Image (cartoon, rainbow, N blue to C red):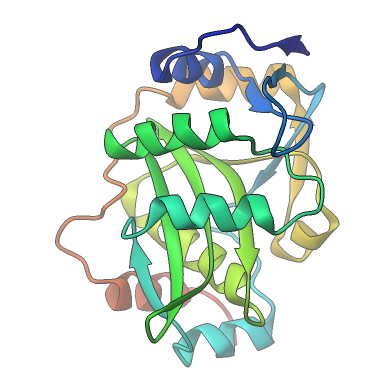
Length: 217
């Protein structure tokens, strides 16, 4: 890990991700962050995401209004607040908000009425989506957001979903680990793939129905 320079631009951050690394701060109040390159990388399957039967039923019931990129700043802020010792400081937050304004970072949002109750965010590098963090204010909201993310990535032509570190909460979805060198090889292969995260022309309902269509009940 290396400490962040005094000034880092969104372009610098994209280059960091393109090299297979990512930023982490010690806390929300930290005025610096480290550049992390783990020896082992955790990833989630996209097309073959394992969705527990109970969660599949819940997704089909549409308990939340799923929105894309409508309130990215609130999503990243809630992700930071969700943990006592968050790795998202103000610098990381502002860099991602800028990348979102450029159409590179995205949020999947679960709304209950006019209240944001869960979601996740990450950034796209060609055919690689780097999942950053998620939060839930209502039961299963982040899990529902993850299923909708994979439905979108599958339809958009993404090849790899990076989850960074092993997380026991993600094991139920088929989380797997690969050496960092293998991750970097895959990143080099797919980082310039043409993809359409917004899945222009398809509704959220269409995306999730098509995605769940090949899953067993």
